[in-house]
Image 1: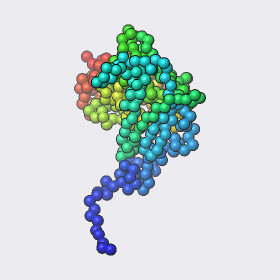
Image 2 (image 1 turned 30 degrees about the vertical axis):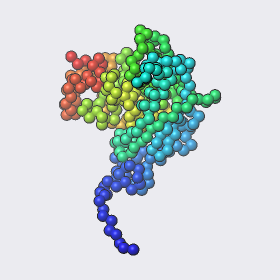
Image 3 (image 1 turned 60 degrees about the vertical axis):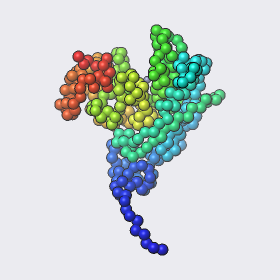
Image 4 (image 1 turned 180 degrees about the horizontal axis):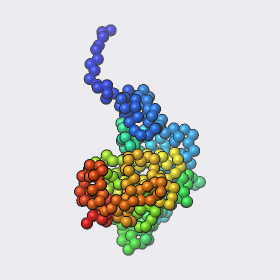
Length: 357
Ligand SMILES: [Zn+2]
């Protein structure tokens, strides 16, 4: 047999011997601050299935009798959701189907919202999962049969804009969740279509153990909202949101955005610890920021109630004011060498949430 010399065109630094998407050189040293990736192996495929053994092997918190079971195979996570609907779900939504004279039923809106947002593929990065990893999320909605635990979707056609998710005192992977979806605002007007198509997917995020990314604007314990430093590279920040209601960019748990890698990592964390995950610290509660959030933000938050940027001290659980949008702009320039305009701050954090004039 003749000897063939195989021309080596491939760059060894670009090789991926075990075919897991992670380049070989990146498998010798953990590129992240997450100890889960300390022992990744260049000769053995590292996947969600191997990296999260606590969810895939005799797991106590992730079992198929739960209302939502995470069925993890290699780098695919199938969200198996058992659900029930109330009678209103089968009625017309008053939203017209495209190129049709028919209306969607409320049920069809729920299914479309959840399928469109949650059937997705996310890429690992230095904050979430691992650079090179590609993770597929699939949603599987199954009508619950008798005796099974479920997620209840309750369409509310009253004039009280009461969209929310309830699950008893504490969220656990096991308990039944009740998702109430309003079709109308307080004045009885139908809510905007963009809102109604996003809400079921957003509320399912709560059922999966995620809290809201936005801070509340009333005097609630949860008024702090995480901030991103570099507005220009928002897409590369770990937590990504835009507060403009009509902007689909951003995170689903902010408003109308997408399921992003950090959300998925927080869900896996919620299922490991059997505990809800938070995007920010919450006063008067033991709720700290999710350990899935690793980008250092020096504890700077937007206090939506007082409309000022603050530094949060986790030991004393108190905040110190930085000031208004101009003061924050100055801090970004001085401490981080980042130049942003007031208009950019308004766009990302919401004009009505900050004092910028
Ligand atoms: Zn919410």
